[in-house]
Image 1: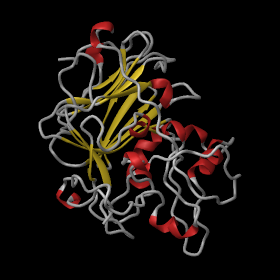
Image 2: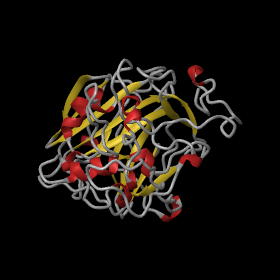
Image 3: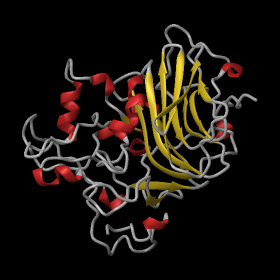
Image 4: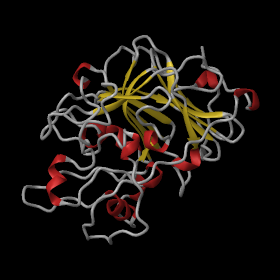
Length: 345
């Protein structure tokens, strides 16, 4: 049993034992450990490569993500589909602002007796970062997917993710609760708040784990929950919509809102490809009878290492190393920021 996991099968993290337990190897998928080069640790800025398929028996193990990232970013290799790991970018880890490590959606997967790892957050958890840290080298994608594996507190109603522009106007928000709203507003204020898509008769806060995938493409937004398409609704945005990266991204709340997210979260990704939502259960968060290619990134503070100044070239197999966590960014006090729109009635 890895350190910090005693009692995880009962949904609670053991206290005071993290220092005394052996280090938990969270880096490489089980099928890649023997190859000496595979890992699941993300690249700087929370960007991780698209999930590879498990190799056939006897084939070489996959390359480290920094090399996979370079390969995926090469022309014709699917650069537009590289996911952004929101939790890693915001610096979420055990012991910070009410965050604890707990069991994830699966209690066991092939090749390991340990459960998936997830973060448990409460009403003290307030994490934020400049949106530019999520997209350091690109603009916010026009069409995209938001992927989350989450277990919200029963009866909760809060925003899991909020993105504000430099004026303090909320341009994007993913709500978790009953009849959740998808808040989206382009640079011209479209759609108006009363026209935000609302997924009625959907309850994402029933105390159970859910794989939630949202696909935004053109003037439509689709919601998939636990691998099933529940609804596709119109998204009345302009022909060239822009979501600013010059503002701030918040986890678990909106500015001026009293409601905050409480529950467990294992994964939160933004993928610049609307098709990713439809393959979420196959590529990013597969069923419990399949290996988890990308486990939780650096959940314990002391597992954060320093990336060396130079690395191997594409095709070589140096030891995988963990990148440094991004710098934490605190939003301005509420009194110093413009007000945010309220949820439509």
